[in-house]
Length: 232
Ligand code: C5P
Image (cartoon, rainbow, N blue to C red):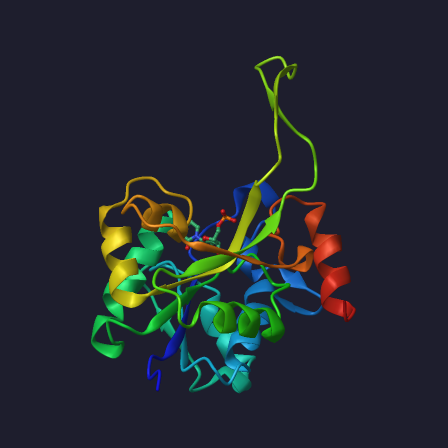
């Protein structure tokens, strides 16, 4: 029997400068709730997830109010005031902070606070696909657009064949000890899979969903609300 547990780790210590809002992106209201509340609620409601850890900045002034307004998260979500200067640092600090609470073979699902469209179904799909995988993997979407590499004048320098290209999403799911080792050794990676790849391993790509996109620019807000208000 497979006795590994599944934990969620949500890095939420960024400021989201590209969105241009006056509060950090993860606290922006979306369909009536802070963006981060949507993510925490989805993980807290997933019975396969043993516990949810969220990494916020040491001087975060918003998370207390968010938790007070969400009694359904009590007991399911723990706060780690360990955020760092980069996403990679926030994840690494979070992994180190929970060291006494998790086993080496337990699975960590690292998910961006800025992807509020994640569903319980996508979490289950990821876990079902990867639970016996020797490496782990991530949700991702096959690229459908033709890709152009631009030069400084926004002129096409090259058309990049899209065959076999995927756009990485989260959650990214790896066993605790492997992920800690990968994140400790990596330098300037933008996702956990990138750190695991530097160990010479090949994470598995598991098809995600467009609704799990990362809210980044101002016009993304309306699209995210559309997904959150409707059942797609
Ligand atoms: O800025 P971006 O959307 O790429 O951030 C992805 C995720 O990483 C967000 O959930 C953000 O809050 C988190 N992050 C973090 N610590 C940082 C920078 C980003 O936890 N220093």
